[in-house]
Length: 417
Image 1 (cartoon, rainbow, N blue to C red):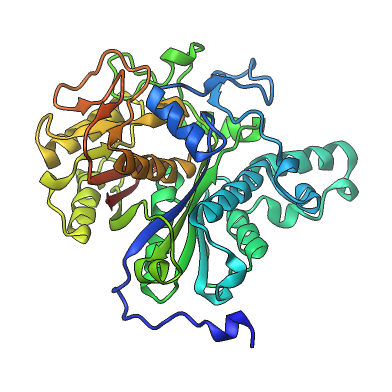
Image 2 (cartoon, helix red, strand yellow):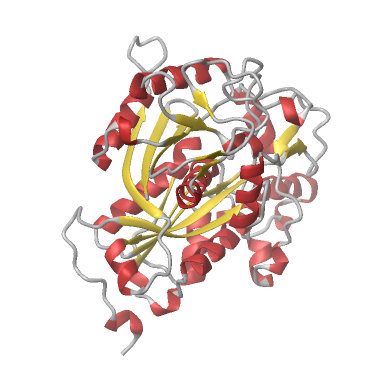
């Protein structure tokens, strides 16, 4: 009898599963693994610089959080390389890291008891651009057959699930920068529906000319050329955001199932999650971030006074920063909870941003330290207890992670130690 037939997931009543994180995999502009990323975050070391993958000189913005020195051939089978976009390769490697970190051998688990839920904002943009260039320069006979799926939003989910034989309920969330949190929220729902393990999070980015002009068209990007002064969330000199690429993949398990298989480590629990959507501009109705925070806290059964640190969305756009600072003061009171935005060192990683912040928050809970918001020298909001300069040693037990996406997406996740 096969393992898949013999080891069915035990029945659980809907809503009873506790979702815990047992593995983390990170690929970011500041590190190609969790350890290096975390050390860079604590040091406030930035990975933002002038784009090297293409010549950005003709564009209004020229800086990005770019992943360098990544060799996919060192990590993936040769057959996968021609059929995958750069971001999909990053996702596959991050998933491998996370599974190894959790001590999970997918072949030893029921294939229908494992889920894959990722987030994406652009799909395989660079792959798509390359094939369009072939189409116009050489003709349709030169376009790769893999273009049919390599560009697609769900391709990271699909490739991870195929590679590891994961056939449980899976999908993709497309909610821009809120996606990394929304994917984790959906993974928790899958666990509550009876799935034992989920691979989730987001690795994203579209650092190619086609993707770059799309991001420029959205507005809000910093036009500065000094990496240390370009992305300054909550600073008086804030000028906009800087794009980046990368993110984090997490292994989320039902706590009972993780204990039964002898999981060696639990980083923390996903205790609360909520998502809201902003009303149309000019409607006169309030934005949805405040409601998302309150719903996530209620879902976690936590009071605002129990939150020890907030990992902010930190748009770097003055109007958006002002709205987030006002919302945090409304929930917690002025200067009542430490707030940080380590993403100022990586850039905003689209759908990868939220899951990378979850990874940082879990490491913060583990180590009892809050990483600083790099490069910010003149905090603009006195009611915000922004952690800057150096890490703050403390004993956080509950963290709130926030994310907002273009055109109105809001998400909040509560993590507990």
